[in-house]
Image (cartoon, rainbow, N blue to C red; front, top):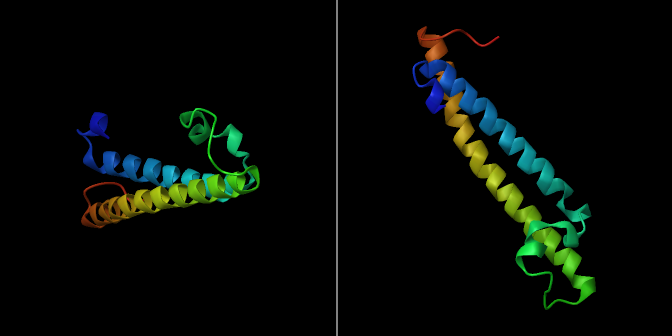
Length: 101
């Protein structure tokens, strides 16, 4: 967006598109978290490949935490994208940029 600062309408549109894409990817990752083996996650690497949970509980715990965090951050991304989309529509209505295709 900074690189497009000479064209505010385009910068807002590009920012809205990419933040919406990021939110969608985070939702997909959140929904897929329960089926992902916890030994294949970044959290597992950060813990030094050891934890104090019984194996029967570890997969469930890791999955729940990852799902909750992915969806939390997707919500924040959507909350940032919405005003950008509204600003883009507002500028289009005012005639400050092209109407959406």
